[in-house]
Image (cartoon, rainbow, N blue to C red):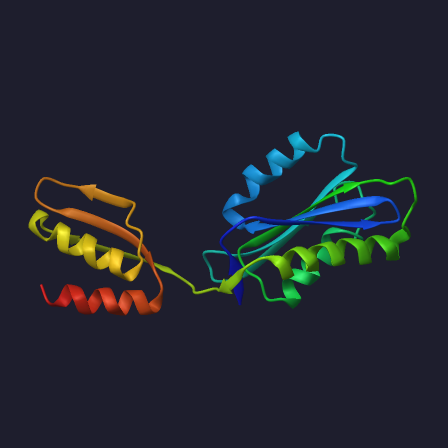
Length: 187
């Protein structure tokens, strides 16, 4: 499976209808969707689809046709996400109607093509599942722990400073967990 780190976009035109496709990490969805509604308030439709790995390790899929005929817009986008094995990614497509009806087959092709184009242009990377890892350490050990986590490329935003120790809550891949466990056993 693969995923994205950044928001990407592309433009596609079919029979005077303009399709502007955006691909983004799922954590950007709400902000991006709101922004697109504001910036493209004259657009006929803002269609979207997403695939997310939920807390039960299941893939959840969702989408909205936003007024387009059922199954002609969100489903083709979702099919592209499934075919390319993207996870924790959303694709939003803004459509400006050009005055010529595309028909159901034309809509399916147009939305599918727009989604494929934006995902092809995006810089995808291999998705690695992460799990929560919690550990604590004395204050004297904090600089060493910070240095080691930075060396592994682990962000350590969630820390609780208690009276005599620091409690760390991290999201780690299996490899990072193994490396950190080996490091912590030294102390």
